[in-house]
Length: 311
Image (cartoon, rainbow, N blue to C red):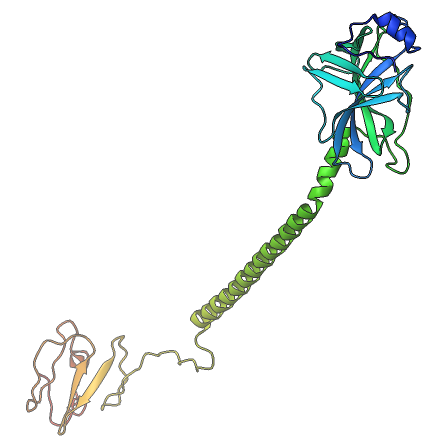
């Protein structure tokens, strides 16, 4: 391991020489990766760690220091320390606010020298202790972030490379899948009930409309053509009265003959002005109607009843 403790007061170059470690320089190819990890068989288990590489990053780190075991570390805008127990060294990363991939992110120190840290796109790099780890930051001695090799997640854990954020999102969706299915089922059932109710109302209103139209049609036929099955009354005709004198009256007025027990009395259809009692035997004429005998040259007493003359 190429780290030294931050509290060591011995000469760092001498210690590095005694440990067989190469001296640090701007040309040193070592890299320190700050990574977020998810459990291979349970993506809801989250952790973060710092991994050390003697050269360019690959799928086999030379040493690993655990940072968190129950969540992903909030790397940005904070100071994070990772302790490597095998070499008794501590790596300290002082990072600024999160930026875009390739941006300068802050500095790192392991007691031997400083590292420049770079923001990285979340990319799968290696699997360690049944955890898939994704690069978040790369700290090195170069003037640019390291180039990561195209590595895919191992086949026994996943068939594609995905970030911890997408893995945790997939886990959340899988945990909520049962509730989502129940909610979807309830929604479908409620929708079906509502549709059935609407259909029933439409059918009911359609039937009522047909009944109302049929009733209205029957009523119109009854008013226009008369009641069915009833004989039509004959057209009224103007009656022509035949009097005792066997003479046909050619007048538009209907003349009615009223008989008493002894002698008949003739009354025209127009309004009469006079009184009739049960003993008088007179003929009353309408003042607006000229008496019939005026138009006759010879009046026959029989035409007005027996022994009756003009008044």
